[in-house]
Length: 432
View 1 (tube, rainbow, N blue to C red):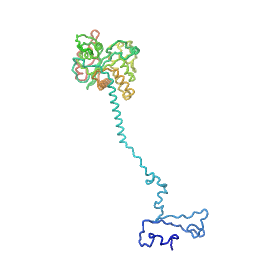
View 2: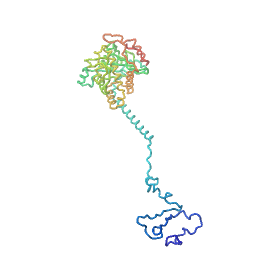
View 3: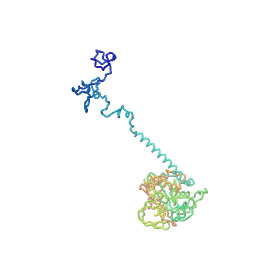
C-alpha cells in the first residue's frame, strides 16, 4: 500500500527518496520531519485520525500532532525551539541576537586618567609659580646701590641683612598722618634698625638702637659722587640715614662694626600698616599697659590682635616704656617675629585671596638693594620666622654705657659678636 498522499506515486517522488537502498546509512544528510499521529478516537466519537469524518464535539480538544526529526526525538527535546520555552524569542539578548551585537562598555583606564590628571596639575602649578615669580620680582623697588659704599669689610660666612623701618610718610594722606600720629615732617629718618644674620648655625637678629653712638666715616655721596672725608664726629645712628640715605647708613654700620652688609631692606610707615592689615592683623601679648600720646598707642596688658594702625603705634612707642629705646627695640623684634609667623601660616600661604594681597602690600612698600632677589628676600623672611620659633637668637646690641645721651656699644662684646657672625658660629654673646 502506498502511504504517500494521493497523486504522488513512486515514479514522481524523484530518485532521492526511498528507491530501495540496501545501505544501512541514510541516503542524504537531509531528514524529513514526519507527523506522528496519536491513537484513534473511540468509535462513534470521530476526530482527527479516527475512522469517521465526524467533527470533534463542542468543548473537545483535538489531538495535536507532534513533530519528530530523523533521530526520533521531538523538536522540543533537541533544542529546536531555540529557547522559545525559556522566553528567549527572536534573539532576546542572546549572543546571536540583535542586542548581542552591541559591544560592552570598556572598563575605565584609571592609570591613564591618573597620569593625565597629574600632568595637568603639575603644569598648572608650574605656570602659576613662574607667573607669580615674575609678577613678584617686577614689584621689588631696587633703589639702593651698595656699589657706592666704599672701603667695605670683607664678606664673612652666611648672609647679613640690614633691615630698616623708616618714618617715611610717602603715600599717606593728611588724614592718615593724623590717625597714625606720624606728624608731617619732610624727608625720612630711620625709626628702627636691625641686623639679621642668616647662617648654618642658627639665625641671629640684633637690634641697633637708633640712639646708638657712632662715628661718621669717610664716604662717597650717593647722589653727588663726591667723597666726604671723615672728621671723627659722633652722632646718633639714625642721623647717618638722614644725612645721605641708605648708602651712608650701610657705610656707617660697616665702619663701626666691621661686619659686611650683603643686603638692605627698608619699609615705611604706610607699607608696614598695609602689610599687617593684608594678613588680617597680628596677635600680640602686650607685656604691660601702654599709653603714648606721641605714637597713638593705647593698649591694655594681655593678648590681642592688632590692626595696621595699632601695630604701627605699638612698634613706635618709646616714651611710655621705662627703658626707652632699648625696650622699644625688644617690642619691635617681638612684633616682627610675630608678623613673620602670621604670614607663614597655612591660612595665608594656601589662600590666594590672602596671600597675593599680602605679597602685593609687602613688595610695593619695600625698598631693597639692586642685588636683592626674591630668593634672598624669602631667605630673610624664613630666618625671621625661625628666630621667632626658637631656632635662632634675638638680642640688642650690647651696651656698655652712654655718652652725651647716646648709647655706647660694648667694644669687647661687639668684637666677639662680629667674629662669631663672620665665622658663622653659634652666637654666645649676650646683650645683658
